[in-house]
Length: 296
Length: 296
Image (cartoon, rainbow over all chains, first blue to last red):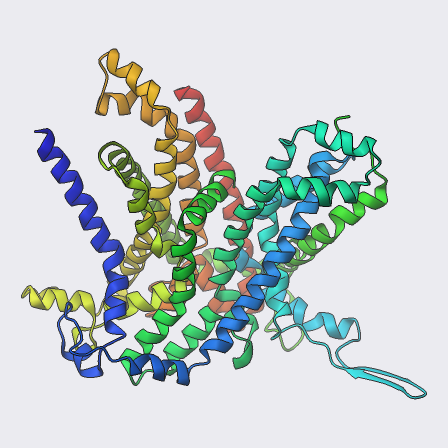
């Protein structure tokens, strides 16, 4: 009886592996097939000979490296600023004596409930108009031999992604870091304070090094969210050379519909960085995502 | 010393950069959106102040609006219905499978992939067999040709195909959260219960379920809020079509704002979205507080 029960349970989880992973494996096979194999073949068949040229063509036709670089840049800068800004704020809320600490915290918590899409249109409007309101959209400065001329714009630059990304990741980051920092024993800071260390010094040399675990959680959450973000990028970016990977993959797929295998290959290439990172750090990532969910 | 007494300037240095960025990029846009919901505005020519007319049209005269709301809520219902299943799976995993962690991290892979990849992958899976679609291919090889559909281009079933992809992608996420919750219940409790004659499902009834309520709540909230904002996947797969059949509140807002250029009307929809997100978050928390009080 017990054996049968166990057997059923195993069967269940085996089926689940198939449903969860087979579509991804299918994509891999798909990306190595010729058009004829894709159109004529059955749902489960290996390509007669793996057609690696699909990858070569996809790589050459799309701007894969450019997209990848843009994603690395945007995600990296966002992560850096999220950590820096939110840890400072979290520390101030956790430890400083001031009236408005809880008010600030509430403001951040409130923001966690605001859906990102609702800000798309106003952000578009703000980004379009800020440079001209500040008079920087067509800036001339002439003073004897000094000649400065520039036209500043936000829309269709990486700044238009990084700024909202930072803003939307800070609430959860402040929340997680604040929760951790409140639990740090006061004695450590006290002795440093007695020795004459400034607040900045305490923050830099004591608080940050202790807070590495929650900082890792924040890093992982920010990475997964920002790396995969598509809508903001698709709304604010139009130049080919500024697109991030998800948007790049999307435009490649929608423009390039001649060769199915190439599309499959580009999708695999698009998924590759995250998959590689996941294989290296799967335990950290799953733990971080759960911690983020539970604390959020 | 429980709190650091620091000059106001130091507090400003720690808090202001983060807070300003956040307020400017999240709160001000929402306020702008509230205001522009009162305008008749296409973004180019001047805006006319029309009071609540946009809301009136939205609630009473728009044939697309209420079906979108219904789809959004149905999305939420389906996503939440998945979670009890995930909890049962998590209990089974914890009881019968030795290397459950590995299994859970395999199920988790779809979660970390970008919605663009997932959406495009499932679009190809749903394709007609003549275009290499997987599902229709399976049905054909089972001689169930009459069951084949063009899935996401058929208005009647398109939305359900999208629900399914979303459930598929986030299955691993909720399973992981529930699994962590189940794992964290100390095994001594079960041992004690066994001595008292309760094991198997009896133990689940009296130990597991009450103890995972907080974690269960987290999954429910995440699923619920996530589906209210359901957006990226639909934009990638159908863009709200065919004939508005897969429109949700968010996608409708986006299409109105950025495709139909009805900025005022789009803002009214955005306002509605923000309001129901806030209302439902508060409501869910209230309901669960009552449940938790009853259980404990």
